[in-house]
Image (cartoon, rainbow, N blue to C red):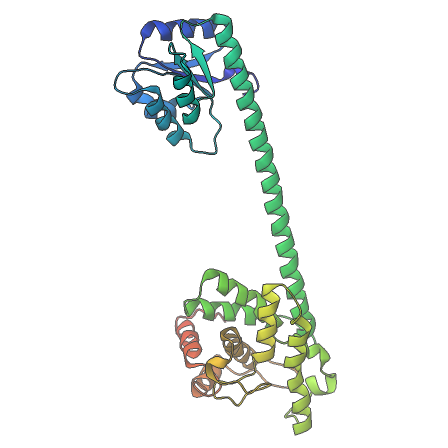
Length: 345
């Protein structure tokens, strides 16, 4: 509506001569799009058809007065849309004007109409609407930019998390894919357990950081083939505390969850895990889920110090460890996914 003469004007007056007069005035002033009705009951349908930029509304009509008609109009456009309404009335008492203003009238035209006044008042209201539309468009543009920037920042955060996870994993998985697979499987299990979409996504993003503490473990221990000596295993177990300490001071909720997972993903359901010997539901649920996802992926992929187990061998062992190493409910959700072929190759 750059040229206000292209505005859609909607006239509602039960007197045909008033409608005809306004149409002539508007036409001579250069307005091209005006629509009219003498039946206020047609307002809802006309509002949808016309999508007006300004409404000229008679105050006194049979069957429905202007104030009732205004409610129909306001309900149609909603509270966030600036649609100016000009009340047409021969009653210029202060009481009528107060009622109109309280109902949301933007201006008044007094009958009989003065041609110059009609055009000037309409121009003023349309210019105000035009400014409102421009401000709304600018606001929408700014909001879109904020959304885009927020998405960019979120994406950057997630990329940093993924890189941190891969940085630790590259030390004993040259592909760096273990962390990604654990995150995906943990998300699937969480979803099958009925967790919300938000919680599922948070676990999926936090899980790849479960072994970030490995960056503090010497290569001669981390990459040692075969079984650890008791003192070596004690040193290896420290990666859980290292990982938790790295992330524990973060104010980022996702990193707080990642810290809990890093510390507790080697706890066992029967209380024989480490580092804290937690038992059952004392272990954070996200850590219980990641424990199984990590176990399955680690066993089914080759490492420098071990062969890859088959999925069948690994699932059989997970079943055997239900209620000992793993939370039975987590195992049940995992087995449902496995039996449905949802775990991939």
